[in-house]
Image (cartoon, rainbow, N blue to C red; front, side):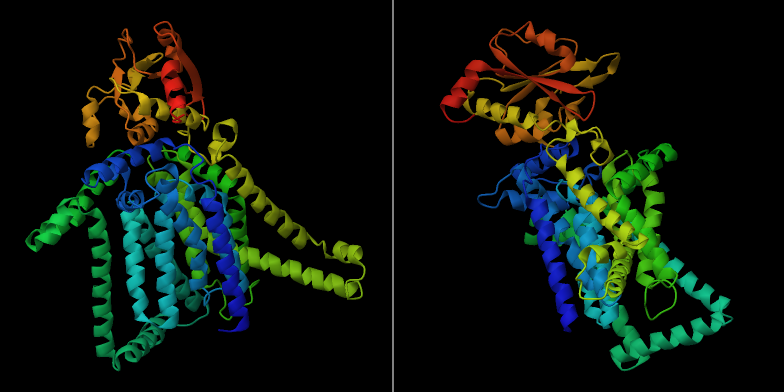
Length: 603
């Protein structure tokens, strides 16, 4: 490896190490989001029962399977930290994919790509979040990078890890299908541009296809197999084997449990399990996400929110991507081939289509969807960063030359170096750093930030609720009689059809789906209460009578605080924002039970 290549590798490794450190630091400090609580609860149920079947409403099985293993690690167990750990590890390792693209990018661009993937606020925040978006994006991007590396090396063996990574992408979230469509569309645009350039230059498109491309393909096949026919046979064989690897990864994760373990012990049952994991899962996905009504919404409001998230959480990625795409396509970057490099153009088209397409594909307005545009746009953004860095370096060298060299007059040198290009680069780089700090300063203080909603999804509770839950945990440990926690069922004021907190049959929560009508309105509390082993009950929304001996913990909506307070004595009151805006809950904790918990060191 050349010396500058070693320096580039060391830089990428250092960036990845810092990315991991940032993502792991205080990873369990923030209270679970509504969506984290929903998936986390059902992971706990799978961990306890060993029973699992794919449900597209909670997306792919990757987190279920991997976190089941995580929770079994001695000394780790089930916690906010361990539940988010795999996402943080994958997100922190994402910058390493830049090294795979070193034959398509300059050294400075490789380092810049690693920096963008490591430091973008959206990628950092949602790498510290138990959700699938960073996972599917990272696996799909890594699959593409490995495939490109195999093309650059002429080594067909890279096809297998690429297939495995793509399989992992499909196990995380269903929009992995969208990634494939983006790849096909961006690839078609690249072919079209290549044909257009030949036609514009007066060359024959037919000649390009029939001679140059055909000759190149024949040469590659011959180099593989000794002849075109044998090379084609080997290519088909490798492709089939790669498909087998992909299907094996998908089938392993999607296979229902414990059916999979029974099929491994009785191989005659394995085809049925594989069919359920593949065909059955596809049918479930299609029924909900394709033919269902989740995408039945107005396009423009979703597009507006998507763009707003990008402008707040990734403005410098978008701006640098424009700079990089223009610089690469119009000759500002010194490369051997005229026009945009294939990788840069491919990633730009992919990112642009994601911006246009995801407001259609998503079912809710969620900032995490912007991750799927940030990852591909990181490639042209890296080119933009490297281009401006070269401009700054050139300006400084010229300034030093005008100052007489040697750097004796520092002030005069810096003043001469402060060209418009240098000023722009400094502004963008400082802004990128500020964006990382600003977005992640809200990690444990989300509901106090007026602008948090641009990056943080609405269903995020106030972090102080975690302190109250620590008290609840202690009370549950010392309570030996009856239910531990009572949810006061209620209606949203002015909307009697919106029922909250009440579950008709608490026993239905042992397996999905939960009994109605409003278990989801408790989230993320079920994740914590299940871990505490709490016995939970609720009152009907039309009868808020607590009885003569209510449980030691009572949870109510803020508008029911007075109703509850009139029926109890000897309880402390804890009010918390349950969402970012206009949604509060009140947690009542019995003083005597809390004193017993403190005496035993539980609270």
